[in-house]
Length: 603
Image 1 (cartoon, helix red, strand yellow):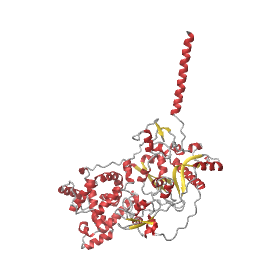
Image 2 (cartoon, helix red, strand yellow):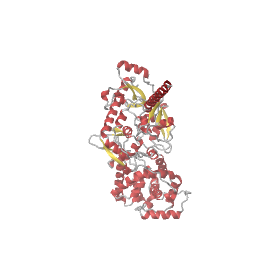
Image 3 (cartoon, one colour):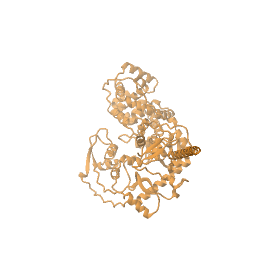
Image 4 (tube, helix red, strand yellow):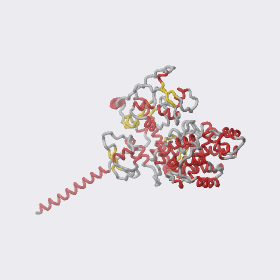
């Protein structure tokens, strides 16, 4: 009996021991050791700021969406004030509202049938557009009002930016006018706006608005009438002066309107119609989309070294599109650093706090990233096949080498160049064009794409053997680089490596299809190259802490969410993986994730 009891006790203790071991094993499995990349090791030292990041993705899309700009520009150019529009708005009620607007405005706002037709046209066709424009206006209008108040310019002129650019700082007209206020290159230089390879201050909301304000003040001193100031902004003071002469010396816009260029005849009424819709949007059921980030919720900080938008986005866990929206004057996605000049980056205030609190670590990472990319480029050149000397092309080109494109309404050289994957300068050279203007109906010569001999990279296995026999160094999965050789263009390179032009431009922060001979392009995130010795690293961690391996296409990997993680920051840990991939693999419908949650990667 005693023996039986002792055996039961021993069995119980044994069972408890086995359970404890199993639990310990489970705990170990739930908390696997995660090797940090250098980027993560830097960010782990950041002082945290509790303010939430405010990003409205719908609003961010307006940065790259030019559909409203195209629609409004087309409306103003083709609008017919004599066509009656069937839209519910009693004429007497409109007269009352225009009279009320006139009482509190320095503009002479008076009813006429043409203005009524334009207002009704906007109400019928552009309600959704104005809802989106009102969201953007929450960010831009305070900037405009501040600049105009300093120069004693009527605040209502802020609505002119809606007519000019649909509040898109990246808008470019067919004639090359750029930015919120659509300055031509010469006018921008005249008003001291900096324009070079990296920067175009015509797209800077603050500086371009100050220049527009200065222009308006000068024109008012000449004409003494704000409607004529607007007309001169559209067609130039010379055309306004000629219209005054042809009208017999009359000096009011509505008296000389028929003597102005056709586009200018619809320009001021479009401005007044825009003002009306902003003033009475509630009465017409136009519900503004709200912009979460407003201008007063942002701030600027001086940059002490050149850095890219991508580096900032990675460090601060924010989309590049948000940085682009807040800093539209930087053309190449890079904040340059010139000796003796200061450049600033505008960010949401919570990101500014993170930046200022961790400047030393941020600049250390920027330096490391630059050196790491330079190392990758040197190795790509070292192990890439030698390019054959370019064969001299004949001076004369047979007509059979060209195809012809007939210019349609709405076309411009930029759109045509993108369609055929060539540069604007090439199209101008082939067609002896002196400017970017092209007439509707003209046939343009476009050089047919030549077959470029495929220059394939060595197989990964051969490359590894060659590297192993040459130098006994560790390998890591990083970006694959390619050096542009004679005859290359983005289309041929994309075809060669099985990618797309859009992906190449995104990987390399390119704003156009032009690439220079000898430029190093990032092709993908799966090439095998040699890692430099640990002495090149800045972090105090071991060399392993700098490695960031891409997940195998056939192997699933689990990731356990840590405090502070987001789907965006997690996707950055796995080259080639997107937020949508993670959501698809894990059946996530929104972006709500919690610490401790297990995510399947590359499943």
